[in-house]
Image (cartoon, rainbow, N blue to C red; front, top):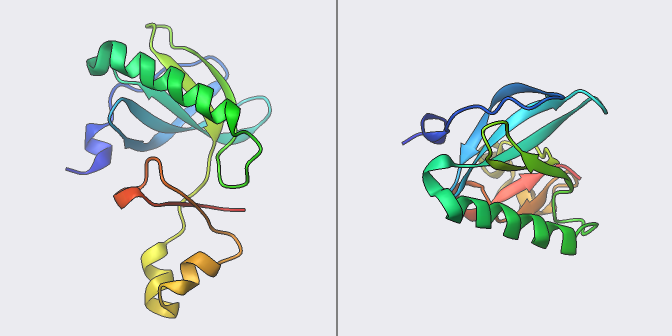
Length: 135
C-alpha cells in the first residue's frame, strides 16, 4: 500500500500550514508543513490515534533521543513539540527532502549516493531503512 494512503487525519496546528503527507510509520504520520515564523518548510510528526499509548510513548521517546543527539550532522534537528487540538502529541522537525536515489544510482553507480555532497543518510522513516537529506 502506498504510504500516502495510510496517512491519517491532517492536524490543524496554529502557525503551520499543511502542504502534503510525507509518510506513515508504526506509531506516527509525517506531514510537510510551512511554518509561519520563521518561514520555512518543516516535517511534522503526529502520533497516530490508532496507536494510543504506544504512539504517545513513541513520540516522547523520539523527542528525548533527538534532544540527546542534537547537533549531530546525521540527525534532523528537532524544532519543537506539542499537542494537537485533539490531544495527539507531535514533533516539529527539520525537513530533509529526499533525493532521487534511483536516478543517481542508474547514472553513477551505488557509490555516487554515498559520495554526494548534499546527501546525508538517516535510518528512521525511509523506504527500506534509508533516508537521504541535504547537507
